[in-house]
Amino acid sequence: MPKEIVCFGEMLWDLLPTGKVPGGAPMNVAIHLTYQGQKVRLISRLCHDELGRELILFLREKGLDLALVQVEQTHPTGTVVVNTANKTEVQYSIVAPAAWDFITYEPEAAQTVSRCDAFVFGSLAARQEITRQTLRQYLPLSNLNVLDVNLRPPFYSQELLEDLLTQAHIAKMNHHELAEIRGWYGVPVDAQESMRFLVRRFGLDLLIVTRGEHGALALQGDQYFEQAGFTVDVADTIGSGDAFLATFLALHLNNSPVPEALKQACRAGSWVATKAGATPIIDWDALAALDQNPAPDIE
Ligand SMILES: OC[C@H]1O[C@](O)(CO)[C@@H](O)[C@@H]1O
Image 1 (tube, protein in one colour):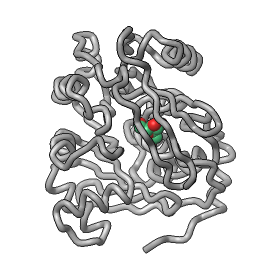
Image 2 (image 1 turned 135 degrees about the vertical axis):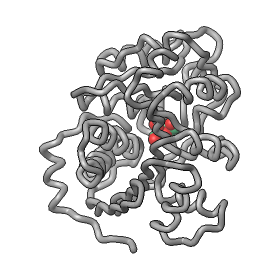
Image 3 (image 1 turned 30 degrees about the horizontal axis):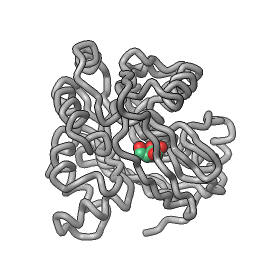
């Protein structure tokens, strides 16, 4: 059954050396959730400029509901200069200000958030005051807050992350982000132990850690799960984590057991890494073939 999922935050163009592709973690998650038949609303903001108009056309073609996307005239539609010199560790220069820094509170959006099945957000959207305040107003309304940590330097602080983690029910981060956050508390290097620490400290129901080609880990209550990764030819890793999260959520919200959701999410993330840009349409048949390419474990 389709679930109602609200994605909040940045929508933008990723400017790659080869040209521009639509991006922004919450928007990427929204598109992947739409591919997977879920009912999605994106809360964001763009400008009535050339890039904004192009983005609207792209999203309409993808079948996304744009009723809660605000349009303004002052701040430009978001752009990010992406350095893909290292294909597996892409660097983002996130241009500021951007229209998505100015998402304002709307009663209709608040109502949608209060009755949705999940509210997906990340730390980057909170880099500027206005969008941060709007996010703070929506978070208490939703029954299931899903934090996609997405640390994008220099736009985060320990204080901000602690605030967001406290309000999250589910959190997803990659292994680099886990290492950084663990470091704030001097927790031992062991992944499982540091996950247990974070789940306890922030009262999380579920914590997921992605490990690139080495798969993913999850801790739900006391139960710890590991999923091995898949070896693929990486085009770039942009949006890989976003496809992972969308796939995990679509399954989790529809009552799949965590190990099954983790496995499909790893497959989807790996597949997206084989293509340029964040939102290629996933070929689920080709994905099944990934099982023949398990990657070696790192631990
Ligand atoms: O959202 C910030 C950046 O992260 C991505 O979503 C990838 O996860 C890019 O598309 C975007 O430029």
